Length: 96
Image: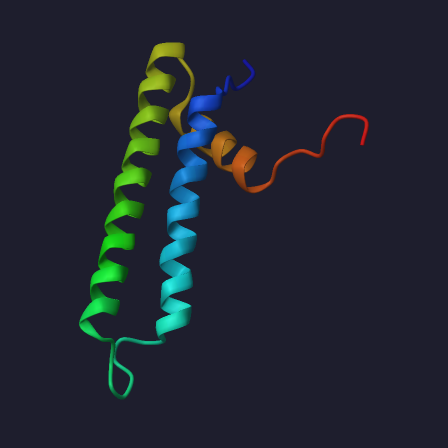
């Protein structure tokens, strides 16, 4: 049985991956919170908000995969792997 994906699963995973990229960007910009001088209160708040958004979006993506797998009778692990591959390693456009 071929893995059945849909645009909603792809969009949710893409949003979670984008939110994770923002957390990583902030960490890169701010440096280590334990460095000399540490982070400002604003930096802690910005990173915390970005991390919370990432966790929320990742949870939504995971829940959608679970629901879709159950509804379609697909293996949840294989479906999750296919969604992540589609987002992180998309196939080149046909004919290009």
